[in-house]
Image 1 (cartoon, rainbow, N blue to C red):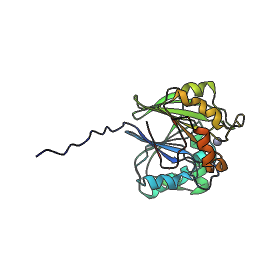
Image 2 (cartoon, rainbow, N blue to C red; image 1 turned 180 degrees about the horizontal axis):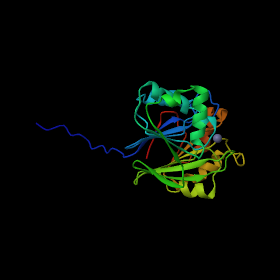
Image 3 (cartoon, rainbow, N blue to C red; image 1 turned 135 degrees about the vertical axis):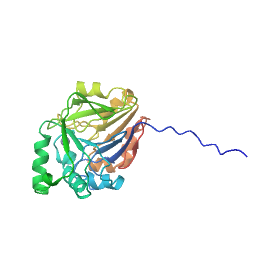
Image 4 (spheres, rainbow, N blue to C red; image 1 turned 90 degrees about the vertical axis):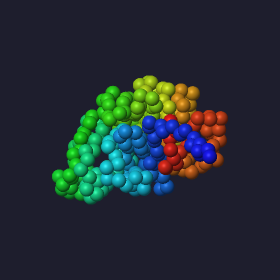
Length: 256
Ligand SMILES: [Zn+2]
């Protein structure tokens, strides 16, 4: 009798999932956010419509080790209050690391005081605040950042486990340094707000972002203006001919 042959299925060291792919005010898509799962689980951005989507993916109190915030716009970090408070309610004791720009700690203090006064002092877990520098490590992941042009300071990020790398723009028009950050990434997730009109200093357009296609393995267009995002016919026409370009939905996996 032959033993059944079990095909070899390699487990990728890093897995990534879109928790949301929408812009700030899209009624259908959660705000853009990416979950990276490796030895540690890291969430990239946490806007106000992210928590429900994240909990539907994994509601475990200890699931996340760290959250990286690209910039201080509500659709990128106003989900932190419910995320932190639910961790408290569920009895979390494991440390949570929050990574972002220098006044992140003060902002979280203010947000928690407004949302759930007194709860920050009741947490049974430590929040470690880490300032996003040009290059740092968190767990098994090495992280690099670069500034884009946005209406507030935004730090795009490249996350690597030494084998695979994922870059995530947050918001903003590419700069020389962010282009260098993205180059040769296995996946690039990029703000692509309008079709062919860049909003100077705020958002790039799809036609500009498509020029990254030859320099990365996979390119994912996110944070699109909500009316444009609904026009699937137009989007498939624009991306037609770019085999490595995708317009993802929430809960889609990122192929690294
Ligand atoms: Zn923004």
